[in-house]
Length: 270
Image 1 (cartoon, rainbow, N blue to C red):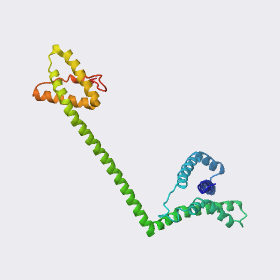
Image 2 (cartoon, one colour):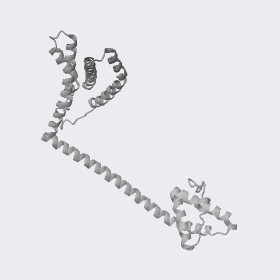
Image 3 (tube, rainbow, N blue to C red):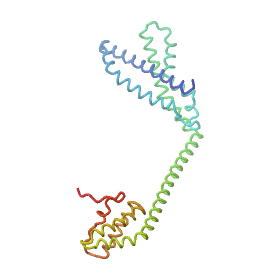
Image 4 (cartoon, one colour):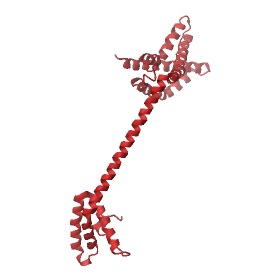
């Protein structure tokens, strides 16, 4: 069994023992306050589900911490070691074991178990709330730890900056390619835009033939560059129409003529 698995099982056993100790202290305190045993166990029963959920969340969080690398060895030369992690997760068991030896001469079972529970609670509080934060703070104040942390943060910032610059460069290249593509389309689509502008001014009697020719031009645009190319051709055509018929009303038949070509769909007014 590897060290990581041992830490997980040790932590499971420690947590169970810690919760049993806390539960025993709570029950004793309620009994000393004058509550009868039936009421105490009734309250405990109603709280069992909540306690189980809290323990499950707590175990999940700690198991992730024990299962993965929480600290960098250079910055935390003590608290990142397997020995310290073993001491940390076994604190409730160590407190209970120390209390067991300390209470060997006590014959009263009530006082014996209460002493073990209080020893477990006190040791766990001391290790998890006092010793561990202080040890971590001392490690952070070490010169080697500070240098490594500064280098690590600088490296992380440099990597973030490099990723941002790569994204910006890729976007700039994409925009440049799109601009070049549009310029190429502009040159190839100019004759088609001029012809479509003429078709938009066609008399009503020639609308069918104009629509057929517009369909052929739209198909060419779709094959050249898809929907974006078709949109550019339409915009070019309408621009020419407005220039040729300043102040006049231009009906956009193109949006209806091209319906069904590729992804082009006529506008919906519903």
